[in-house]
Length: 276
Image (cartoon, rainbow, N blue to C red):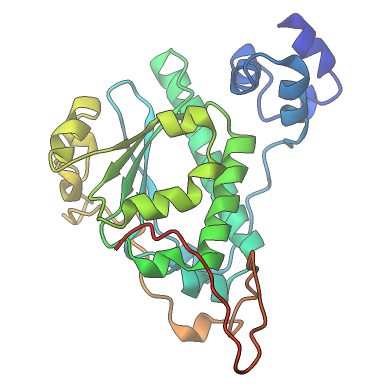
């Protein structure tokens, strides 16, 4: 809308992009409500300077961009199982973890721009594959869930209409519990794009992605130059953070309810059990 562009004249020069496609994303994200779209966009700043991140994040934060789907959109893999959330939070600040995710999002945004120029059509969205094999109770540690929630909120607020589809593969029985803990950070539109795949996940991925663009590890034919089927030159597989990286012993945890129970007294608490 010309009115939307007019209202934003003062901030347009500082935005990552000024074209109509970019502005339309923010309108769509707020159902074409001009004041809400403007408020959302005004929180965004220009492309951040590439952050200088601690070595521990570069080495142990899992995930990475690898390949393109059949329409030319970049693909991002999140590798949940080997991610040592507690080790990372004891070794780096939450701010650094947020900066790292910002950097990932900027890499993907720039890749979309490059693909748009290369293919001669607008590429605006990213396809994501979440490998949930090994997801367990260690990932449900409260500070980790809170930090992950902040990462998701940052993505929603700064990169609206950027997610094409999010495929969950190899989800264990505990997955619904983990998803319940974080889904309230996601917009309704994003939730609709989350698809949990069953045992035929490799076939489904190949409907959307040419096998030549999928690592052998995920059912395709793509390998690193040295023949590694996991493509670790593109995807970081995380791992346990060695304790010599730790800069703190513990994290302050915010709980919704606290109670003091005196000696000889009892206190009853009711909880909904989400899984056996």
